[in-house]
Every structure is written in C-alpha cells, then in structure tokens.
Amino acid sequence: MTIDNFATFRVAACDLNGQMRGKRMPASYFAKLQEDGVRMPLSVLNVDIKGADIEGSPLLFETGDADGIMRPTSRGPVPLPWLDSAQPLVPMQMYLEDGTPFYGDARHALARVLDRYAARGWRVVAATELEFTLVDDGGKALKHVRDPRNRRRIDASEILSLSQMDAFDPFLSALYAACDAMGIEAQTTTSEAGVGQFEITLNHQDALRAADDTWLFKTLIRGLAHRYDCAATFMAKPFALDSGNGMHMHFSVLDADGRNVFDDGGPKGTETLRHAIGGCLAAMQGSTLIFAPHANSYARMTPGAHAPTAICWAYENRTAAIRVPGGSPKARRIEHRVAGGDINPYLSFAAILGAALVGIEDAMDPGAPLKGNAYGQDLPQLATDWAAAVDLFEADALLPRIFEPKLIRNYVQTKRQEIAVMGEIDEADHWKTYLDKV
Image (cartoon, rainbow, N blue to C red; front, side, top):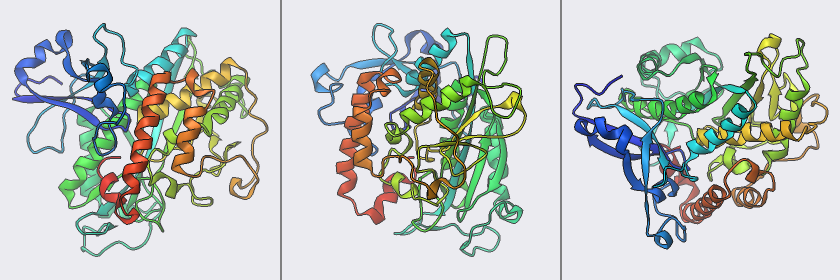
C-alpha cells in the first residue's frame, strides 16, 4: 500500500520484549523516510516490560543515550485496521550512525542467522501456530470471556468446536479481513483447549517474512479484540487452572535448487535433519529465557499440561519439545513446541534457527527419538523458574554463536530488572502488566 490520502503514518521497530517502539509522523515526511530514516535513541529498543530504561545499561548515560537511525524494512507500509483514525504503519529496524545494523535490534539478530544459511546457498521457510485467549478484562480480576450471542460467561473449553467459532464469528471474520489487508496469510483457525482460546496458523513462507507476520499478527489481534467487547492476550497462562498459550514454530530448509534438505524420500528424514534437531536440543535449556521470557511464562510450563518441559525429540509425538510431523517427505520439517505465545518472534526464530545451524555445522547427534509420554520419563528439563533461566542464558556457551554478546548482555539486564519490578507486584495482578503487551 501507499500512504496517499493519509494525514499521518507511524514508524515502529521491535524492542527486546516484542513491543512496537516508534513515532507518529506527518505524511509529508514519508518521501524522506528511505534516505533520512528516523532518529531515535538506541536505548528505546532495550527497555523493560513497563517501558522504563534499564538501570546501568551502557546504552544510556555511559554513551550519552545516543541516537540510532531507524530505516524501513522490506515490508513497506501496512494498514492498522483496528484504529479509528486510519493511518499506515511502516515497520522499521535500527542502525548505528555509520550504517551498521544495531546489535540490540531483535530483527537484525534473526537476519544475521538467516545470512549464515544464505552463505550455504540455503533458504529457511517457516510458519507459526499461535494460540491466544479472549478474555474479559473489565474488572479488578481477569475473567473468562462472555458468549456474544447470549452474554453468558463461557465456563468450559470447546476443543475443535465449530459452535465456539460460530459464537465469535464476527471477530474471526474481521480478523481474516484485517489479515488480508495487512498482507498476513492466515490459514486455519481452531477452537482450542482453553476457555475462550483459539489457534490460528500462519502461512509457511520465507522465515524473515514469517517472523514479521507473527509480530504484526499479535499486535493486530490485541487491537482488534477491543472492537468486539473483549480483550485478546498471548499471555502464556492467563488463568491458573486453564490451558496456556503456546507458539509452535515449523521450519524446513531449501537448497539452491529448492530441494528440502530434511527430505530423504521416507519418514525418517536426512542426517541434516537429525543434526539440526541435535542443535536445537543442545541450545534448548540455555534458551529457556527466550521461549519463556516473563514471570507468567513459567506457570504454563507444567508437566502434563500440553506445554513441553523435557528436552527431547520424537516423530509424531506432541509431548516432546521437538516433533517431526508425518506426512509427505517433501514437507519434512521440524516443529519446535517450547515457546509460549508471549515471546518476541524475532528472538524466538533466531534462537531456534541459530541452534539448528550450529547443530548442522557440528554434526550434533540428537540421540534416539522419544517413545511414549515425555512427561513420565526421566529426561533433562528446561529451566523451571525465571531467575534460573536468566542465569542459564547468560552463561550458556553455545548462545554466543547465535546472538551478539552485547544483545545477550542487554537481554539479561532487562530480565533482571523485570524480576525486581514484577516481584513488587502481587502475582494476582501480574495480568495487568502483561495482558496487552505480550
């Protein structure tokens, strides 16, 4: 789309928590956007979940809180269908004054990983399955959403229920229309195990575009729901006794001739597939903080509650952290099932794809695939609490091969500050911080 006939437009880049940070600008500036960019402090992409500066960050007073320059991504302007005042958004990414990509920009972190695949003549294609929950946030406590047809509060899950989708058809129909307007290829919708919970699958496509779509899609759903007398959240665990929200990421790798390097013509997949799985497993515990970045994230990671907690892989087994789905060998792929819906898509994609590439580079052996229920077996585990996850992320020896060490430092500082901030808030009120942000 163009910005013709719009008085203003927005620019935004993604901070380390997946939040949009940017400005609203007059339409007259759009012609200068590509050449001049938009100046904004580098520190803005490294604030905590409440939007506060990180104490002691080297991006602040140590360097004079210097500006970076935001420049448009290849995405171009997209509409924001949930706003009353029509205005496009131009997705941006941050650069240093000399034109170098800013190490603290999550989108650049993913692009850096994908460049390493490209150096091999490979291209990653990916898709996400996103779970979200419709809720009533109008009171002092978070409540289950009301059925729009009769205004009665929903009190039970409706797994794969068409009746549940009928109840929310106006919202879901508007969501598909909005996705179409924004260039987001939404695929199937299902009613999930949680009360008021749905899952939508986005199209399998170029990995960077898939991450862009996931970032925009989360913002779209949260904004659009308010037009339908409810709120939508990707919180990992909106209700303590209900199912949590996950984000499953599927990916395969194509060579220069378009062949899937995971496909051996049969159900097992290639040695390259196994090595990629080995890398994902090796990095998984240290990457827990990426997949479970908030205080609420750890309420989802409960054995037997459909969220993987054990570090293992399997064919066609949804209790495993890494699943290799069945189907046509041409579509052989890895499904990474660990992340909650509350993640930063760029960091999550970078962690998964970077780990897979390290596994391929080092010919890592993933061991034998799991048989049976992962929850009932003695297996290595993900970090079980937020503070432990921060320590593991900081100390992990593999992660500097995926992320810039300065980004690791920034992320650790951010999460340690958030641990202190959220520790001062009653856990029953954590949803007030997270609901519209993650």
